Every structure is written in C-alpha cells, then in structure tokens.
Image (cartoon, rainbow, N blue to C red; front, side, top):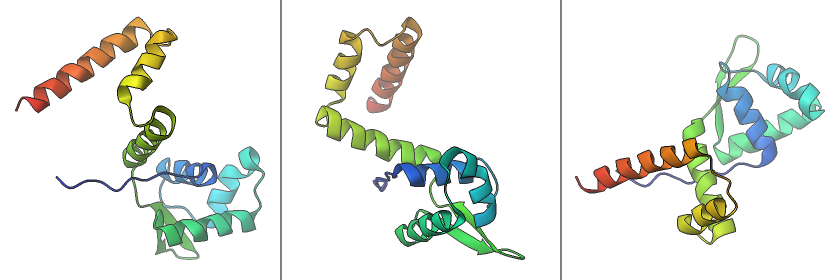
Length: 130
C-alpha cells in the first residue's frame, strides 16, 4: 500500500472541513450561516478561505442549481492521521514512546484508556507477525 499524503489544517480550514464533513455538499452561504455565530466571519472571509482551500486541493465543488456546492477531498480520518503525525513530530521529536511516557508520567490515562492501548498494541503485534 502506498504512503498517504500528510494533511494538516489551519484552524480556520478545520472549521470549514468540520462543516463539510457533517453534511452534504454546501454552498458558501450555507457554510457562512453555519459558522457565523461561532466564528463571527463575514461572507467574504468564508469566500476567501474557500478559495484558498480549493487552491490547496482540500475541497472541490460541483455546480449546483444556483451556486457551487463544496465538499471535502479528504476524510476526517486522513486528516487526523496527518495532524497526529505532525503533533508527534513537533512536540515529541517523532517519538511515540516519549508521548506515551509523558501521558503515563502525568497520570493522564484512565484504566479504560490503558486497556484500549493494550488492545491496539496487541492488534499491531498481530498485524506485524503476518
């Protein structure tokens, strides 16, 4: 399997992507109305962000009856993978072990989370033995 492109988003891009991930393709006005209360953005700000996201290949559009309908080019999971790798690289110098050690040392893991991690590691171990 080929290596996936690492996707990271600016905070403003994330807000628009969340809007698009949570619904069908949307026009600028719908995106603006959805985010207006939370962000205070004007319609022109949303237009500018959408234009930049189109240039970056983060979103695409289909022609609608009255206006373009925008949709994301990447699923939430692909973005999460890229942003997680970016965080680990920046904060923990690429070391997952250092990240986990930090969480354990600061008692940030619940018993349930520890069990979940054991399950994940067992699954990874099984996949690596195939």
